[in-house]
Image (spheres, rainbow, N blue to C red):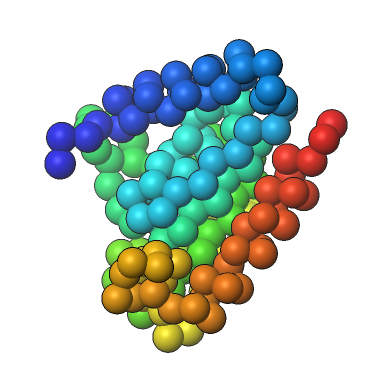
Length: 157
């Protein structure tokens, strides 16, 4: 509850800066993946850090809320600069199927490259092995898509 977008942005930017300075990292091939709150952060960081080349969000909730006085991740959609993939459960309530459609519509309206997938009989945390919501069919479908997406958008330049 004490997290603020400004702090999250500062922390992720510091992480990206570290990665860019590491000799074994190609700074042109940095991606971000997140689950639940981390999925929200993927959407946020895809708008604020131009060094991120692709983002994958798994059931990223609360994208319509700001965690401080600034704009919410959704309100930053026009600034998104990299392709985004989203994985959503049809039985999830945060984000709900309506939330997913709203994100998809705004990304489409603004001509932002994205791919969204919705999985039947899956709720929040469907890819979390330790969760009662784990759904093998959804997890097994999402992982190859995720790796393929990163392979396509973060391939060697």
